[in-house]
Length: 195
Image (tube, rainbow, N blue to C red; front, side):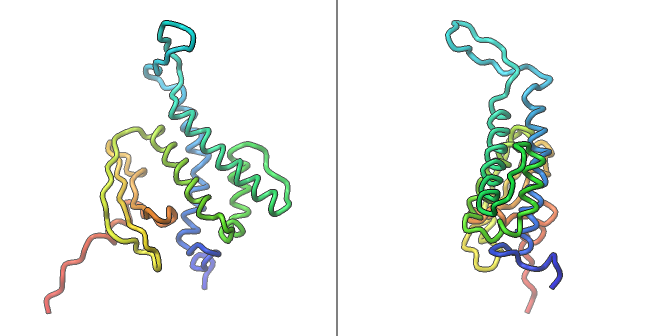
């Protein structure tokens, strides 16, 4: 077995690779959410507490929430790894926490709370994706999950406005089961062969 085809704990090799890829995307998403805080266009209008007027504040609450969610996921999982493995925790900086989690990914892949990590990552990445790639999205049911022994259903999440990078097919049971648009050909039913 090659290193890339070897299963990692409770994750298959493809899901392990997907988790690595997701972690690698977090610093960029965090930075893009920061850019969304001060958009070039008109700022959000918020009513300032204690006043009778509405003031323009250069803040997009969704970007603030996305950055907070990403930081919370990375901080809590870095703390868990540091505590349970009795190693020094990284600084509370996104790139350092991502690098730390990647170094301990084989251990995390066998952790009993792995599915909680996957769910939290999925939620925070989706939130960040919505603020850095705004646009309407559409969801289409695809059918049963293609992963062995998975009882989940697949849903295609498609974004409008040419944001194909944000589109994917995901399992509603295991967020690590996902396919990018260039892999969707596998879901097109084959024509029945004549007998």
